[in-house]
Image (cartoon, rainbow, N blue to C red):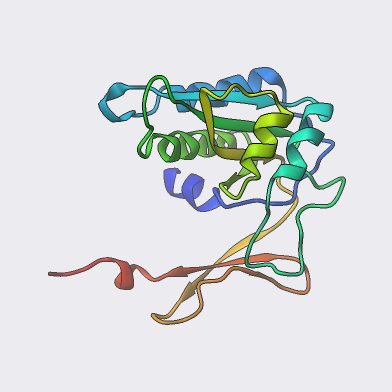
Length: 189
């Protein structure tokens, strides 16, 4: 069961935009991040949530989507996320180390358990988004999680050592994600 949850937790980039996510659902997901491990238990992460269409429209243009897909600038209208969780670092508390990655993974696994999907986005026009949302300087934007009901098929492709790791889309717009084989990631020393 956990295996299926992990395998189905892909970077989804197209969604059924009309499928709304309640604020309560987003808060439930944030709670998974809040309860996740934190280096030295500092807990420097803060979160901004959005399931509001107007706020979502402010967030969307500040995100850069799928760098390997050079001919695709992101989801078109109707396929955009219906919710976002912005993960911030409270600079007054300290640095997050890898806390934001741990929290993001917990949130995305939680989203999959709710039949939702998401994409962890680190390519962000941070200064512009910070200004657009009036985020105080005390907070640094670390990640944006784009969330929604997935509208795309993501296929894992096992590759041989040395083959290209760049994801790609086929003619049916199915998203293929190359993954190294188990024998190529476990070292026997």
